Image (cartoon, rainbow, N blue to C red):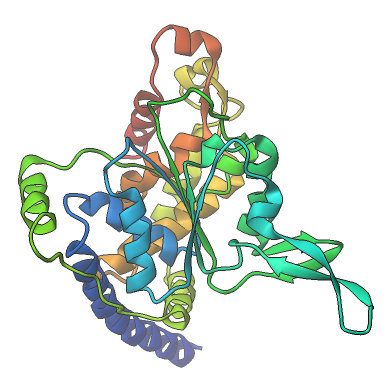
Length: 333
């Protein structure tokens, strides 16, 4: 038994060393195009290594669309972009059946696949589409397949949705339903770059030529990395920290009185699953073979923020979710 465990540990170590080199080259390639967003890039890569989907929230012009295009190049994935608008219909995403007639006059329906049949789908300004259209992504994001015309059609592997949302222009938008928000592994806040990064970006993007990203891995290698993430061992202290954090964020089981009185609802089991995978992915991305409690604390906010809701009275008093999550993190720090 001990020999088997030693062999497995040796195999994981060898795979992790190879993958760490690839991940370093991936970040370097992305850095030639995306400036001043190191934390965002890290969290997006964590999401992809975990096999999940990501919601990018930020004002226009911060490079969200460019980041998705760059990821498609670096990861060697088939990338598509859909601009979500109020008149977008589910068939515009999933595809539709058309009636065709052959040379002999026989008629038959043929399914024409929509843009969702790709490996990396960018849902740009996802909250501008109606709830009916947004719901077209629910089954695809959870089950990696879609039901069309009574038939179940699998999506390509790997399949990831990278959605963007503008936090300041809310006129004509539809809030994402809680069920769909829960499908996103992380919600990432895209902030303005610092002065040095913005200066470097100006010099690099307004000259005669611009830096270009290069393909570093393939889709098959990304799937192998996702499998490796699931094989990384998780210390008992990390498991306990995840459970304490997630269960402590629910009003029904919270230890903090502020959570019990100021939260309308808290994160479900999918949040704990997301945190478990994300901490492993962060460890691998940083060249470590096992996650730590520090990884749990670093990822608590992007994992929990979109899975919690303040009560009406708490919002009226100016309470912020970030303050609530900080208080929860303090209980396990």
